[in-house]
Amino acid sequence: METLDRIKQQIGDNDILIYMKGSPKLPMCGFSAQAVQALMQCGEEFAYVDILENPDIRAELPKYANWPTFPQLWVKGELIGGCDIILEMFQQGELQEVIKGARAET
Image: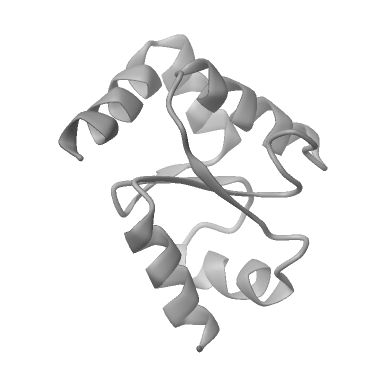
């Protein structure tokens, strides 16, 4: 399967998906750690892809998403943003609404 097809499938198959460095239990960068911490506090299950173990995705996703950095949070097929946006949304209570809304639709 082509890398771009894998990315599209991952985004399509998971209502809440974060592309990050490392895993939620063992993040490998501060930005991924902060983003996943905020996401976990929303209380819903989410999927993740470790871009360090998937260099092809790490190379292709920024072009597909038109977003150069990681982590990247995708909800219902839409790019929400990176660490700064995730944290800002969380502090304003918006992230919790988006995450709960994504779960309520399924």
